[in-house]
Length: 121
Image (tube, rainbow, N blue to C red; front, side):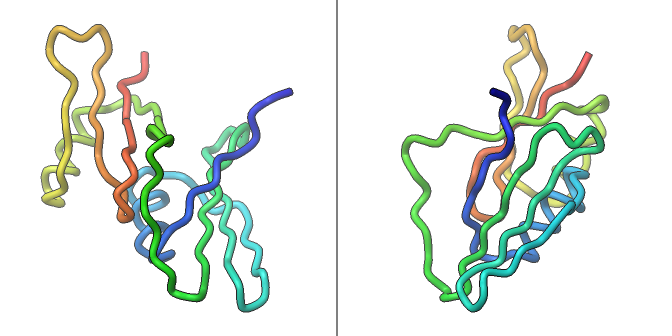
């Protein structure tokens, strides 16, 4: 077995694509329309080993974030640049404490999901 994808429901598909593709640098690799019900958009990094599925239900329903989901995590080779960009956008973020072994920030995506961005080696 190997991990394949994680699915999250999104309220505004374009805002989510702007965040995950425009800001985080993921790429849309495929899109599937399920009639009038939903649009599924699969995103990945350049290695294509794992996918994030954005599901946008077309009926306009709202979602309550689940209490069992923790967060998504991505690696970057330049956390300082990411932090500067987040600050320029005026987004909320939380930085790792100085005494922590790893450096990271948490930001919220447009639907309020936590996204951890870690400094890679």
